[in-house]
Image 1 (cartoon, rainbow, N blue to C red):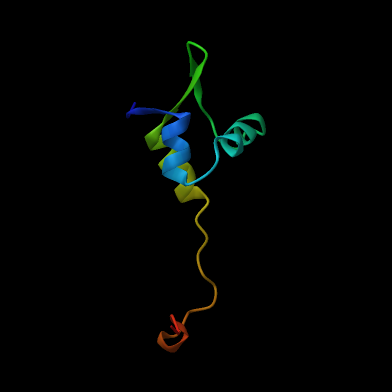
Image 2 (image 1 turned 135 degrees about the vertical axis):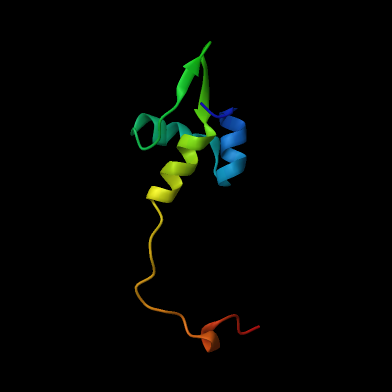
Length: 69
């Protein structure tokens, strides 16, 4: 098992509010381990979950469609 992180660290890592993570736990979108009343998350499991949610682009982006600023 890789390093366990708490909900604050996960929220920071994913750039989300803690409430979103609690909602995802309740909806069983992500998994966690409750240790002593505190949620912990396996960083490796979170990274695998993120990779499983990755979408491949269907329309290639041409170089001239980049930032126009």
